[in-house]
Image (cartoon, rainbow, N blue to C red):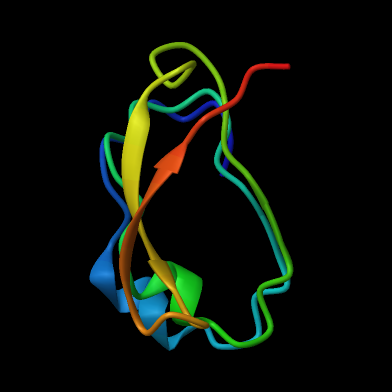
Length: 75
C-alpha cells in the first residue's frame, strides 16, 4: 500500500485480521488508526516518507490498552 497518496485507511480494513506485514510508506497519512495496531498478527509496519519525518502520530498500544503517541524516526 506504499506510494499511493493515501490520506486515511478504510475502517473496513480492521476485518483483515491476518495481516502480518504492512508497508504504508510514501502516503499522506496523518494518523495511524487504533484498530491497525490491535491486529494480533501484525508484526511489522513500515511507515515513512514525505510528510511523515519527525512528526508525531496517534497509535494504539496493546500492552498499555490505550492510544499513544508515535514519533516517526528517519534514521
